[in-house]
Image 1 (spheres, one colour):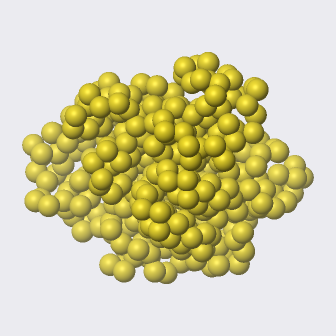
Image 2: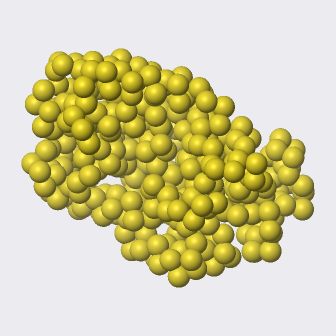
Length: 363
């Protein structure tokens, strides 16, 4: 990329704001085609957001619901989105449903492998939430199953499609901060008891799998480098609530990239850590705050010759609409998604290395 001057920098910032206000964020050529049909597998919180996002889209539509609660959750969402009750079912019927082009896997982490493989075997493209799986071995199984079935696999890294993060990447990769030096990042929340994510069976690990993966993945994406050295400390200070009997409360880690750039990161299920990523270069720095929330991502620069101060304006469905439409367009045009299964595999390899450095087994 050409070096980023002040005019180009301003233009990119304006793009970030404008893109969040578009009614349909990733229209494909021939938008008069019927929408790509998704079956939502699992009707929890994240699937609820994904379904609301598709309801706003002209290229993506929820056409079926796969749930173990057809009389309650199934009928509720079918009524909201005009889905016939005949399209509320268990997974076995999905192969014959011609209204379903792809499945959205919004289940607990340990179920991602099973339903991705089953989706591939049913001939449906798969958009799977992150983390892709609970081990790198499972990731490889998923990639192989989709490859063998000749279907597309995309992992739900919504940050890769969010306009403000795209501006940050353009600035980094164009040299707008000068030579990169280091990163700082964190993300965490105070998890309520009795959640599946606090169990090793369903979560596969602690906060690193769920929220720590955000800064880890973004650094890999911004730099195009794979970390090759790690240190880590996993800790638990809450010994009374019982929440952390199976997974760590907090984990801090460092990682080094082949170029020599370093990162200091943290995630937690025991304290509120609003999403943050600081990016330090030789000529200036940038800070992304509210970085991994569903709305209000803020990007600001300090030092150097270029300056930006911008906030995404979309609602909590905006990221999900972009990624749903991106995958729909890939299915229509036969192109590969921006975040394929190989992207998820690389994160799991790094996560396994971090847990190994911390002396904490995974899965």
